[in-house]
Amino acid sequence: MRPFDVTQAYISASKLVEAKAQGRELIGPALPGPQKDGRFTAAQFQINVEERHAVCPAGKVNTQCSRLVEASTGNICYRFEFSTQCHDCVLAAQCLGKGQRHRSLVVGEHHTALQSRRQEQQTPAFRQRMKHRNAIEGTQSELVRAHGLRRARYRGLAKVSLQNYFIGAACNAKRWIRQEAWKLRQSAWLDNSATAAAGAN
Image (cartoon, rainbow, N blue to C red):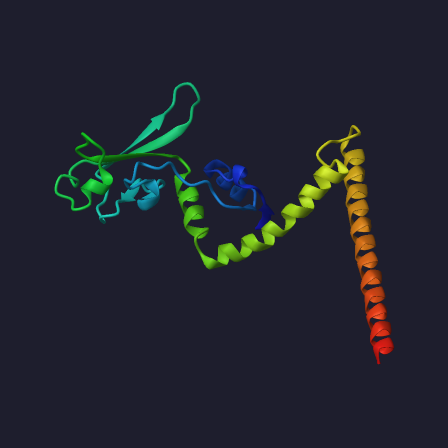
């Protein structure tokens, strides 16, 4: 599977599933779920949409699951109900809102993929991968701000690709020149230090 580094805005449940179907992997953190005024959120539930199965923080399993389709957009979501387990639950105060008798959750059809990413990004291995990803942010900013990478000056894929190659080459050349200039300054500083030390002796 070919990895692609993307920003947080591109990490959504549908994008994760779409990328996987295409043999790609999107690398980046998913946005956190909405907060519930201190109450348990969907992130604290173990949800498997494909199996219509959910487990609450108290370890209780949902009693039913309904498939919902939004008429205007066609978006699909699923509502999980915990209709009989909440009345005597010791965690009810942390889970139920005012006036609620039982807990229900509504999640998107690709919530399983999103939940998996949110759990993965808490691991040391994911944080290590993100360190490599973050290193490219400075280069991307330089290419956009200093070299106009975001705007194509020509029409056609071949010309635009050539423009990007030239931009990359120019960026590399500037970095090489800065590195060589730094080496010259360091060499001159060492020579001056050695001369001063010899004169002092």
